[in-house]
Length: 81
Image (cartoon, rainbow, N blue to C red; front, side):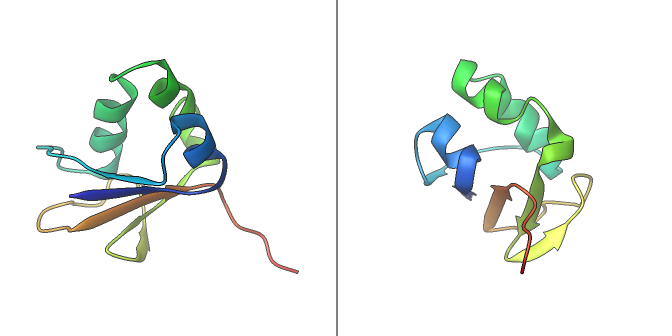
């Protein structure tokens, strides 16, 4: 599964994307797996209230199913003007 990171999430992790093998059933479980890797991931996923997630380019909740997903993106809330 390809995992994309945007804005300060990308800055904390130090990369814009990566391919990961996971058995996570939800974006929350994937975030837990990633956060357990090392400190930079833990910092990026420390406050999930400050994050949004998209699965296959659709905005979803952290408890959405990942079954069959090809891409997950993590990013901060966006504002418009």
